[in-house]
Amino acid sequence: MEKVNLKEKFALFNECWSPKIAGELNGQQVKLVKFKGPFTWHHHDHEDELFYVVKGSFDMEFRDKTVAINEGEFIIVPRGVEHRPNAKEEVEVMLFEPASTLNTGDTENEFTKKNLDSI
Image 1 (cartoon, rainbow, N blue to C red):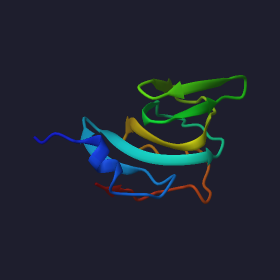
Image 2 (image 1 turned 180 degrees about the vertical axis):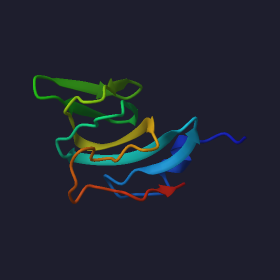
Image 3 (image 1 turned 60 degrees about the vertical axis):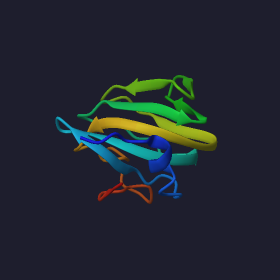
């Protein structure tokens, strides 16, 4: 049982769109990711996702609306809902989702990360 310092963990990597596992509990993973620009449109058939903004801000785009998520805020994307994160400037985000969640959901492309590093 050790505490996790998010600032220290985010300092361990620079690459965007490459989630890192920072913790695990009850079949869920706490992942840290940095990103800038638009991701790929996708959805998850079986998993809900929580996106918590640690530093910066981003837009969560849905087909019918866009929701701005600012530092200290989070959004839960329900399973089956198509979405695309998009950040004008680099953002640091903590994800909370089932360990089975593939970052690109139903889509496989250059953003897909099947094997995540633990930090």
